[in-house]
Length: 146
Figure 1 (tube, rainbow, N blue to C red):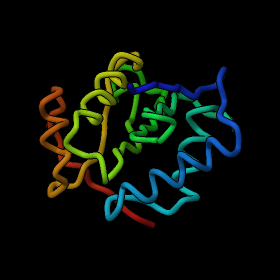
Figure 2 (cartoon, rainbow, N blue to C red):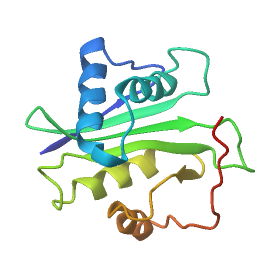
Figure 3 (cartoon, rainbow, N blue to C red):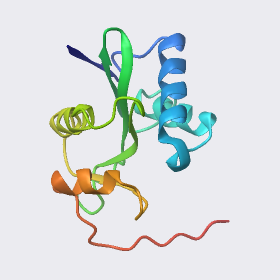
């Protein structure tokens, strides 16, 4: 049975829980991931460990083992930019194809108020799953890295 746990401003993770989520995301995002300190910063943003708009971090566990995690940050730009950005989402690489990702996305959409944006590389196989839930690619994103 899958259990859902949500961390936010009112229900902050312990240091060991946060470390578990950071390690899980780092290991399971694989080539689509970021360094651990960036993942931790996104989680801290979601739980308002510093001045931010907040959001939430959700984990799914099965038999006490982490199977999926998502980090959603509020943007503070209601209406003209989606209110939320799905920063990180991953399922356990050894348990993919069992519907856990679908469950996580459904729970994320239900938990989130307002629109959701996410960045996904064109060759990421998860893109098809996001499209099944109504995510579209109406724009190209351009970035200037300084």
